Image (cartoon, rainbow, N blue to C red; front, side, top):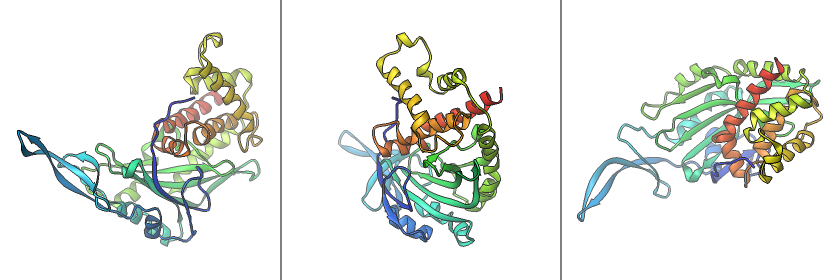
Length: 318
């Protein structure tokens, strides 16, 4: 239907429930270090000089191999100025939040054979509700530690709609205040990241305002078609000239509009339109559950959700 990058989940652990139905269930009171071990990402990486063979002689290539210590697997080739960041840094980042009772560990794991390691924590006292408390959105902090050359540590907030376990768009325009990136060309400073990011409740407010706005603005048949055409470009053009794949996709979108979990909450509003997109990216699009998860957080579907939110707000405000 919509192309996905298929990124294999190597290992994962979750508390309570997993949005994608994948992984090992663990107790609710794990410390960050215990979650790291439960998710099987309690390994370290090191750099090893890389060589090329020329005329039977091994010559240093000027690059380094990033090697996982647990099995000596080469995760990537890096330059000399690229500083490895250990998984323990990612999980220790949550220690203060957990100790103060502001967060609790929720999910952690490894993607793409160890090249992407993530930890997700639920932020307490930052939820909001719509429609008299029937529709709740919780806030989570996602820490991603990439063992991939050219990728930065990424710390961001992820709203998740409880009704259907949709991970929603991060924020309008995904401003810097909602996302902090740390280059592997400098040491990781946990305190600096926390200072830049601030507390989740502050940054969820703009999303809450957008959600409340969308839940009060109604669409008609024409605006519904226009919305999906703008979010899904393949829906544009003469219907008679569309191929079977596009026609089937269009039919599926219209079907999920009515059948997605929580469709009755805000029925006929732009909130329903937006959540149709987030539901499909998290639970429908792609061949496997792990490819959906990967694309939802790191691939094409992450950008699709942001476009879906911005388009919904723009059209509802017109």
